[in-house]
Image 1 (tube, rainbow, N blue to C red):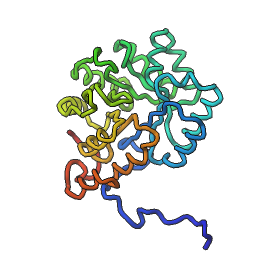
Image 2 (cartoon, one colour; image 1 turned 45 degrees about the horizontal axis):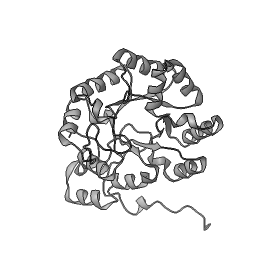
Image 3 (cartoon, rainbow, N blue to C red; image 1 turned 135 degrees about the vertical axis):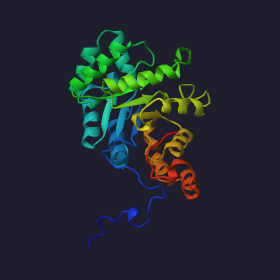
Image 4 (tube, rainbow, N blue to C red; image 1 turned 90 degrees about the horizontal axis):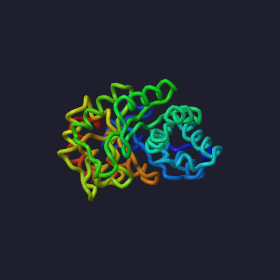
Length: 281
């Protein structure tokens, strides 16, 4: 027997305390990582370590324009070769809209090899017809679409009723999932108060207005937010804006391999007591 022979997996010995974790390719339990400027070596290391646990990498904001063309293409290739979808941040699309370059922007996104695009209006105003046009045009170019709802600035806050309407309209137009805005801070936006605490009433009102929590991706950059959403919806809740260095920590949280969710699992608390599938709030 060779010494470098692959060891048996840990899960051949110890079962995950929270069962039912979905495997890739999956439609629930999605993890979206926010990349604010990883180099190629860092990207390779992230994918070598955690590709099985990452579904999407978002090159945040408008950072795509700051990469050299060759480096950007290589970064996209690395993600795709590892089985991870990659897309530019929604703010970049909003800039294209403001500059009347939406069509050219979408074509370039597809040409560069991105697999998805985010359609959002977190900073600008984008009417329904234009939003639908962006979603449908992206799909016609072979891109998957993640829509995003919610405003980044508290001064532009819109009602939950309006957000619910936008979610349903985005799904009807062809978006695969709808992201609930959380920003990179997770503070003072949509379901989070200024300290980052989850506003339970707002969360429950949003979920009550959609076909299933599985159609939503909650931006949850902070650990306590991830924990609360997992305890409420189960291990297979869709979470986004995860820092690259926190991917394994989040996966451990989903599987009950951290004290907080292990305790909940042992006590039969929350959605973790079921099979780990997203449920209703």
